[in-house]
Length: 493
Length: 77
Image (tube, rainbow over all chains, first blue to last red; front, side, top):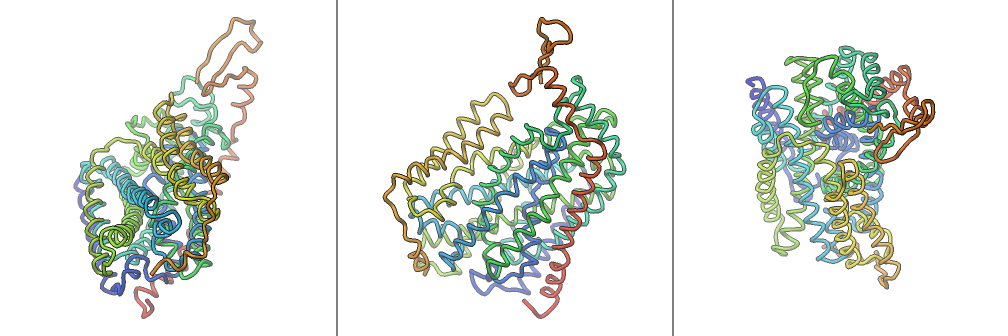
């Protein structure tokens, strides 16, 4: 436990220290500078930042869990499912930048497009998502510190989130991006070094033979005839659910919009997001699903590995088996810690923007100065983030994959109205609002009435995403609305 | 996954297998389970993904590192 506590203190010292260094070297001259880094960040830095802020704890531990559930297809389906929404985010941000060039938050756009009422609904979803994601990162890093070093889950979940809160409120998006870059280098070096060592220790042939047993022996604890199929049908169902989950997580996360807006132009943004997502990020969950997840189900009996109370425990268990409590374990903890920090940081940066711009100036004080907005944004962010960090401490042993999948039920419903409304002028605020309600209710019914987790996940997420789309298409076909997009550029003062 | 046995002669599709509620004949089930990755295919897949990751990481890391060093330690903001 001592090693774990020392690591926590060391990380706190390093990352908070770096935040103070960045805020001193690059003081923010304006709210725009603080919230979207002055809209002038180089492509290379945004690419690295996007990659690492999309590496969540669930990218490592949830993908591993998917590997235990779906064999070799688990990580692959996690990867493509989570990557697809970024290819919608790009045209959406491009369109918003064209319609409202000085827009800071996506809810600013929605206020003009659908009216204040609907935009407040999105604001609630956007803020809730930021803090939901942050909470889930706390669960992941708390689990890892507990499993690897015996640090009490409460400390392991709470302290990293407090570190993130401090450095984001101190250094803003610019500090978050620079921090992300450092963490990108560290995470990739750790993965590049550790993965071959794990594979050499466990033996690919042993893993293959173990998986063959999983696929062919009905008495195997993890019997699954599709364990050695990349085109597994159950894995594909999970992939569909993963797409829906990621739609909500990406398209309602102000942090990704802030980073996209922080690029100098649309070409840079396109390059940063495509290179970051497709080329650098996609292989990571595939690796984690196959190296950690499939190894566990293939070799559990052979190596005498402990049973796990939650699938998220598989990745740290494999690492501890291979590296003991040594350097490799420290590297793994560092990697998961970085994943939590960058993702949490991305979310808090986004929440800060929403609270400063849309809540304070948009609702509370329409004549607010930038200083007042930022002060409110930082204070509110700290308070809510601390509350979510505390909630995370009650979620010990909860599966990250379950948390991740359930977030699709909660957050995918508003996506269709947002996306379609950008391009189809017949959608109006009433249709958008009804679609969200219908999607949400349908998803909840599907989730709670399903007979098993796979059905709940699949049908619940599909309802959340597709029911609103049906409502929007049918409603808009009969709608007399013809929204004039030309007026949008004059709305922002 | 459930395995049930009908009252039918051996050698016929007496064994029925279910997967998520769907029912397959024995031959169909054998066909499904026989479509497994070979060891060579799995090895290729693992190596391919790892190399893909390393190349992708380098494509991002090298310019990012240059830009980071210039920004933090240089005059450029």
